[in-house]
Amino acid sequence: MFRIGFGYDAHRLVEGRALILGGMSIPFAKGLLGHSDADVLTHAVVDAILGALAMGDIGQHFPDTDPSFKDMQSLRMLEQVLGWVHEAGYQVNNVDSTIVAQKPKLAPHIPGIQARLGEMLRVPVHQISVKAKTSEGMGFCGREEGMEAFAVVSLVKK
Image 1 (cartoon, rainbow, N blue to C red):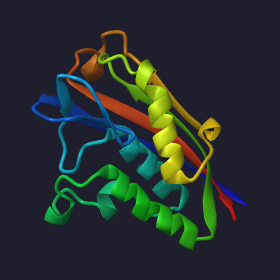
Image 2: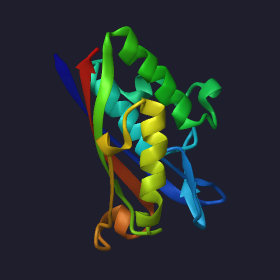
Image 3: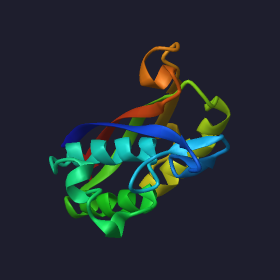
Image 4: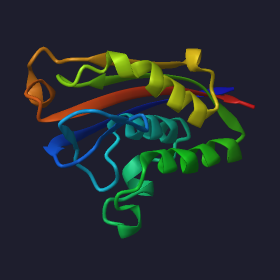
């Protein structure tokens, strides 16, 4: 038995915030604005896992109206959701994800992001795909107003 989930997230870029992607701090003049650390990639992965479990979305479990989640590391959300995966008798099989950002160049950071996500998900790094794309100057990502991320996760029975 296996299950598949799809996740998406987007956040606005602003000055005065750290840029966190996949739990890693990426050097850049701007960061993502959100109630938590606004890690758009980890949020998409969490949403994909929740989708695979048919448990709704990230906003239902970690609402931005709850002060206890203010400035929370998104990796802590991922840990909690992974507990639900294991309680349901599954484990993560693989992740395929895409970050859309005009800047900064993310290619040099992708191996580290893959390693960090693999460690968190307890999945070999060769089963974690992280891709970075620009939108060729189009839309909010192309105008460098924000970033978005997409993720697909497969779960398999233990």
